[in-house]
Length: 187
Length: 187
DNA sequence: TCTGTAAGGTGACCTACATCACTCTAAAGT
DNA sequence: ACTTTAGAGTGATGTAGGTCACCTTACAGA
Image (cartoon, rainbow over all chains, first blue to last red; front, side):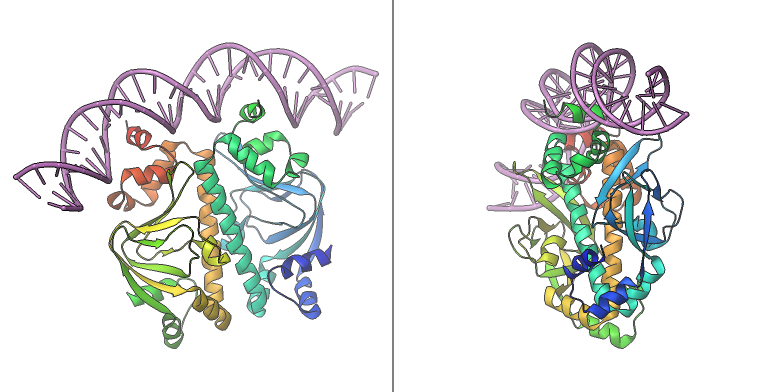
């Protein structure tokens, strides 16, 4: 799986073998089973995960205990609670595994060290962050201007694989509509 | 106004006098009158602006010509269309002045040069970007879980100044509700 | 093998918000 | 000074989507 990480990083910056080996030495691997947590509310998140296998959801619980999905992530996506990870404050969200999963992860300290030592990696993360920001902007735009049906169609178009792996209840929550409404959208 | 920029940058990284002078040499100033554009749909955005005076809105027009506000920005905020600026693709949005404004701006080339030359500035922009991303995440969360009235109250609490400077029509658009609904929220 | 639980679908009803139409006021443009 | 335009409020009515209740199916665990 490690060559995939290299490939992924090299989409934004180029690396020598030595550089990649050095980067990789800052990562570790971990496996989690379906329903296990990566992050729980209240903890200070210490790791950023890169998914090599499986699928996770990140969500928060509102005052009524209702779950709101922030995002899904699967193979070759990064996942963590950035607010907690970046600011090192207690997390307000949960991240847990929708399937048995495998990850490469980097600790807060190693990420910081690597960014300080290797200007290239600082650039990589800066670019990732910019792209992440643009994606969030698009989602806001979609929440502002599109109806539930339109948001559903856009999601289906962009991530058809998601609909094979994730229950409609969770998709509904991601789109910000009720399960029942989602169920009625295609009629 | 330039000491305010220094102060702003030094909230995230520390600088010597020489370093700040060097950074500043990459910026230029510009004034715009109320109703003038910083960015128009279709152009490739070449500049990132730091507002020294005034207030702007960024928005896009949907298929029906309806305006949706993405964000407001005022003194000591950065503004540009990041999607266009970062990817150097044509912008989908407009940014225009709600009042007579003054800016410090940096060109795409200078920003890139400065980031490559000065690791500190790369770190500064990386941090800014992370914080921006966290703020967008919060807005999504708010659109998912809060009612129009709740979003109004949160905005009023967080940016009371905005309500002195910006028409309710624009606030309504930012919140994703109609003018009429906003007008009825406090009754 | 039985049973509890999660997933999905659907009907009946409710409500938050949109839309349209109109009014009043104040500021801007000529 | 006169007129146009933008901002803001409000009534009447329409509708997307929420909520509650109930049903079916499937699979996971004992």
